[in-house]
Amino acid sequence: MTNRLILEMGMGNDLYGMDYTKAACRAVQDALHHSSLTLFKSLNLNSEDMTVKVTIGVQEPDKVDTKIVGSTLPRGAAKVIAIYGGQNVIDTDNGTEHVVAIAAIEAMYPINKEDWRISKE
Image (tube, rainbow, N blue to C red; front, side, top):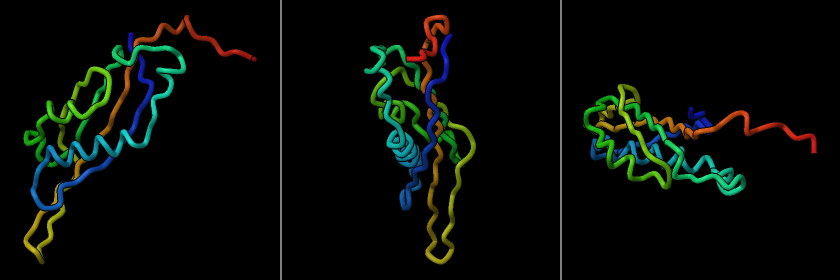
C-alpha cells in the first residue's frame, strides 16, 4: 500500500505562445521549488520506489503533452494527467490570450505503518 507523503501545488503560465505544455511544466517546477524531500536521505529510503502523481489543470487538457511534463520530475515514477481547470486570460486590448496552468503533485511511497512509531527520545 502506498501512502501520500507530500502534496504540493504550483502555478505556471505561457503568456504569448498558448503552449499548454510549457505552462504545465512551469507549474510543476513552481510546485517542486516549494518542497525538499530530505526524508529519503534522512530515513535511507530509495526515491526510485516513490510514485509521483501529477494532476495538471488547464482549459484545454488535450493540448498538454503529459510525457514531457513527467520528464521534468527529478525522481520517482511519474504519472501525469491533465484535466479541465486552470484559466485562460484574454487581453482584448492587445488581442492576446494567456494560459495559466495549475499543478498538484502528490508523492506516494509504500509504507508499512507497523515499521513506524513515535519515539519519546
